[in-house]
Each structure stands twice: as C-alpha cells, then as structure tokens.
Length: 474
Ligand SMILES: Cc1cc2nc3c(=O)[nH]c(=O)nc-3n(C[C@H](O)[C@H](O)[C@H](O)COP(=O)(O)OP(=O)(O)OC[C@H]3O[C@@H](n4cnc5c(N)ncnc54)[C@H](O)[C@@H]3O)c2cc1C
Image (cartoon, rainbow, N blue to C red; front, side, top):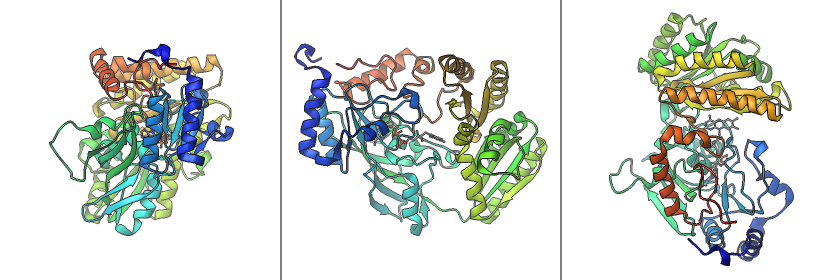
C-alpha cells in the first residue's frame, strides 16, 4: 500500500498526467466539453459524471502509454467502447480518464479455413459482419445495438442468437490485454481447446474493464447458414408462450433464435415499428437456420408444440427484407417502450433462471407487476431462460424508488430459483447490491483478491463490479 501522504491531490495528479498524455499522444487527448459529456455515461443517463479528459486510443501502444502514466499517478481509467451498457458501467469516478477504443477498428487477420479472425477491440459486430461478407462466415453474438467487440467481451454479452451460438464466453478464443501498469499480455490463442494453465481469457471476459483493457480479440466465426426462415406466433396467454419456448428447447430443436414480447411490449412495438399486421398480444419470434431438410424438421416440431399450447398460427417472414424488418422491431423494443412516455425513465431488469423455472418465474413476476401498479413490458431471450422487464416510471425520486422496489422483487424471485440477477447486461453499479446474495461472501472474497493482485492501485474502472470495492485513493 503506498504512503498516501506523499500523493498529491487527485485533481493535481490528473492535470499532471494530462500534460504528459498530450506530449505523447497529441490530439488523441480531448478535454472538449461535448466529448467529455458523451463519455460521462452509458445508457443509464442518470448516473452521468464528466471525465477529466477522453483519450482516443488507436493502437495497443497508445493504451499501454495511457495506463502506464495513469498507474504511476494513481489516476483512474475507464475503458469506453460504444457506451451502450445499461448499468452505469462507463460512468467515470471523479478526476478520471475515459479511454475510448472506438478508433481501433482494424481486422488484423481472417483465417477462413480455421473459421477464426483477430480484430481490434473497437470494431463493432455489425462492421465485422459487413467486412466478412465475401468469406461466407459471420460472427453471431448479437446484443442488438452498435456495441464494440471489446465492450462485448468486457460485459460477456449475448443477445438473441445465444440460444444457438452461445455468448462471448463461447466465441472468444484469445485476447490482447493491457494490464493496469501498462504491461501487454496475450491470452488464449487460435486453437479450439487447450488444457494449459489458468484460463485467463475467461477471466477477462465479463470483467467490465476492472482487470485490464482489451485491445485485440481472437474470435470464432461460423458459416452463414444455407437457409434462414423467420416466423412469429401469437398467444392469448403469456404462460402458454413461455411454455412453448421452453418445450422447443427441451425437445432439442436447434433453434437459431426464440424471443418473447408480451402484450405491453407488442403494443409499443406495433406503434414504433409499424407492425400493423400484428395484434398487441404475447408473441414469440422464431428463427430457423440450417440445411433445408433440417429447417423443415425444426419448423414441424415447433409448430406442433405451439399449437398444443394454444398458439394462434404461424406467420412467415421468408425474404431477407421481411426478416430484417421483424428483427429490427425486436431490437428496437427498448426504444419502442421509451417512446411510449417521453421523459419517463425506463429501468431494465435482466434475470435468468434454469429453463425449467422460467414459466413459474414469469407468472410470479406478472403478479408483482400487477400489484405494483406500474407500466411494465416483458421481453426476452426465453430460449436461454433470460428475460427483461422494462419498467416505465416518472423520472422522480418516488417513481425510481417504486421501480427499484419492483426490480428487487423480480431479482429476489430469480435468485430463489437458482438464477442470476444478470444474464447479459452485467453488474456495473446497478447490480452491485445483489452480488453477495448470488455468489456468497467467500466467492466475492476471491474476486477481490484477483482485483487487488491485478490492479493494486485500483485505477481500472473503480467502484464497478465489486461491492465495497477498494476505495480509490483520492
Ligand atoms: C437497447 C439496448 C439493448 C441491449 N440488448 C442487449 C442484449 O440483448 N444482450 C447484451 O448482452 N447486451 C445488451 N445491451 C447492453 C450492451 O449493448 C452490451 O453490454 C454491450 O456489450 C456493451 O458494449 P459497448 O461497446 O457499448 O461497451 P461500453 O458500454 O462502452 O462498456 C461496457 C463495459 O465494458 C468496459 N469496456 C469497454 N471496452 C473495453 C475494452 N476494450 N477493454 C476492457 N473493458 C472494456 C467498460 O469499461 C464498461 O465497463 C443492450 C443495450 C441497449 C441500450
């Protein structure tokens, strides 16, 4: 532990570091007010705080320079990808540097025969897939928005395609990471498996910028399926829809996507995305992928299960344009709800349970929602047992308190069913209060030991992911 009495005040330290950073990195360092404002928050606007400066890294060496200097001076650094995280992940502490990786968009290597590639961490998933188009390969993890691959690693992202292809955890083979003191390490490699040593790649996946800054990612790629078909099926009853999705998974159908939107969400999405042919009823969105014979078989089984659960028939979207329209509406679900009541806050929950527990959980949650008197939409990646509620509330302390009370009830139900408080959004600061209950004090103790070993000065995104994290030396 350093002798803090010899460390100048945080504001003085950060100005000294900014002067050094400008010497090394020139106009990659910005203190412009609007640039700082854009880096003061992710999607959780209410948690905003300005960084002292934003550094736009272009290479691993730039990142290493920033961390070495900030480490030396005890200045906190918050890695910033696209800022789409929803739990206050990228909100800086006071006197911090926001380290933006969005200029690091290179594709360094595509090994088509081995179905892998190496990219810089600021590349977005959409841009990667555009640039891979001619190879017949694609990267499937799809959190919806324009997230960076580094941010997706750092939050262990998943999304609509995880039911078939897995999450970032299953699709990252290796990383280049800059450690808190500026040292650069490589983890993993190009092989599909290895039994040598601790799995450092997995350690950084989901670490939310608290253990190191990822600058390069080695990704698994997948072949573009021969046939893709999308369909929707509507239900009078929420539980019937959930049961259908669960039975599709239990029957071993290798479904590409199965997403649920309840009646409240559908009413919002019909209005926002012009889905006028649909009714405001609980709806399952399906995607089937594979060889034509396999797709036919998957569809047959799914249609029977939906019919047995009182589904009201399948409507098909077979052309690429129709499919894109449906999935765009699904991906815009959050914005559709936001547009219902301009000026309201929308608080998103992100529970996951073992799939057999999903129907009882959602029934219980629906009862909690009714008792709360709040306007709430339910949607989710139900094939994984993962769903969100979007709680709409007036942006007042009373409104937020009521919404958070409901959030806590929902999380409590999920944890009681062996679930988790976040299937994909991560901890940030929004989920800190649930971690001890989910993991236990001993496991949290091990996480703290790792944090102290890798970031002894607590400069990497301090205050996130670990409850009662080490105090920043201010
Ligand atoms: C409408 C909406 C829908 C969403 N749907 C989904 C969904 O379906 N599934 C899902 O998983 N998520 C979803 N998200 C959340 C979000 O898109 C993901 O968390 C995404 O992975 C964040 O990526 P980003 O580039 O925006 O990261 P940021 O928000 O910039 O950063 C997120 C965290 O990662 C850290 N970080 C960023 N880059 C690096 C790096 N290179 N090295 C180390 N740490 C880094 C940051 O410090 C921060 O802690 C949704 C968000 C919105 C707004």
